[in-house]
Length: 154
Image 1 (cartoon, rainbow, N blue to C red):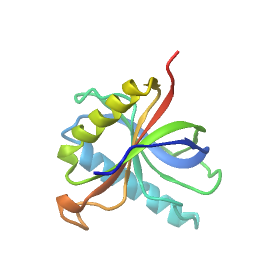
Image 2: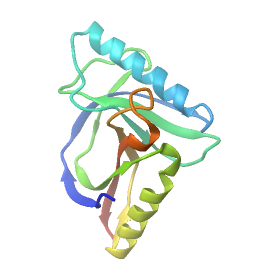
Image 3: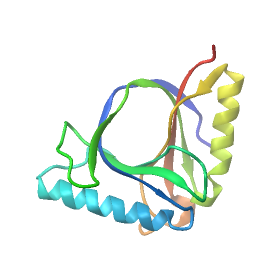
C-alpha cells in the first residue's frame, strides 16, 4: 500500500476536453478524448509532458462533469473542444493506487480520512493520472495516481 504524500504542486499547463457523461459511458469518453488530444498534439508537432489524466468536477454518476487531458510544456492554441488551461499552483495530497479501477473507493476513502485527521479540507477537483491502461496490463497491475487539492481547515 502506497502512502499519502503532501506537497505544493506547481502550475501545470494542460490540453483537455471537458464534458458531461454517465459512469456507463465514461471509459469510452475517456478513450475518445485522449485520442483527439493526441492527434491534435501530433498535428502541431508537440508531445505531452506526462501521463494522461481525468479530472472529476463532481461525483454524480448519472451526470459526471469530467475533463480528460494531458500535461503540456507551454501554452498551446485551442482547437474545437480541445482547450488549453493551467491547473493552478496549490497544496495537494496524492496516493498511487495499484489495481483495478473498480477498487478505487478504498484509496479515496483513505485520503478523505487523512484530510479529516490532519485538519485540512478538500478543495476543487479530483484528478486521476493513469500510468498504464487495461489494454497494456492486467487489472491488478494498473497504476493510478489520485491527486486532491487541499487547504488548511479554517
